[in-house]
Length: 260
Ligand SMILES: Nc1ncnc2c1ncn2[C@@H]1O[C@H](COP(=O)(O)OP(=O)(O)OP(=O)(O)O)[C@@H](O)[C@H]1O
Ligand SMILES: [Mg+2]
Image 1 (cartoon, rainbow, N blue to C red):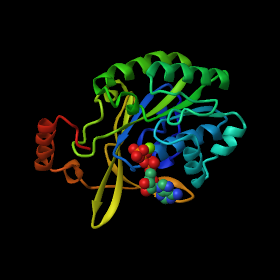
Image 2 (tube, rainbow, N blue to C red):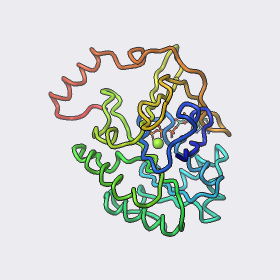
Image 3 (cartoon, protein in one colour):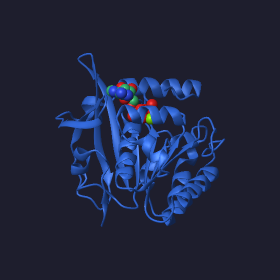
Image 4 (cartoon, protein in one colour):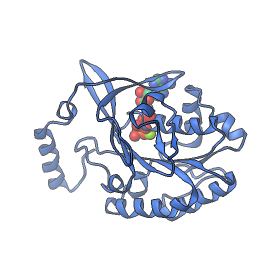
């Protein structure tokens, strides 16, 4: 089995060398925890190996993605120039590579068009975020994830898809992608001692003897995301306390709105 480096060597070590080729891996977690930056490392690693890469962005426009990647010297400008990287802008819908609505069928056909443009061989695909496609219909999460995985499985792609979490309840927006995904890399954050700390844990990676430890993550200007040490914290240590969750649930029942 070929495993693809994520572009973050310490993370590769946690998953027996990398992500198995052809896998569909979900990156889930709260805002600002490093999901997008990990996606960028994954693409950068592909570009280094002369692989084709497709980056679908729903939350930031194309230039924001390019600027952020350049802050970490991830070679996006060069990849675009050489035609090895295609960024599909699903936020503004502008430029040659874009979609104008968050529609799953449009997304899939645009990805296939991009894959054909990149040519024969394996390519890396990032969908950042996938949950944006079902924000107003969370019950569709599972069906959409399944259909994306099924259709794209014929196209020689290894896929990273991000999914956001409702901050208060720590429930995934539209629970569903987790079961369909071959792997789940979960990002977390906590403020401790007045400092924002970020963590990463591999919750699932099929066909892989992966680490069960949670690692602290750091994001460094000019370099990007790296892993620090495994943490002794238990899941309960960084989870939202039950009484707070209860308050949120009650308020949700009263108002009918998700409190995020
Ligand atoms: N040049 C930089 N140097 C250091 N840290 C940075 C730099 N650029 C961004 N960051 C950090 O990375 C964070 C953004 O990470 P990222 O975009 O990967 O989050 P995310 O998990 O994708 O969040 P969201 O769900 O909102 O998209 C910023 O909030 C900041 O803390
Ligand atoms: Mg992001």
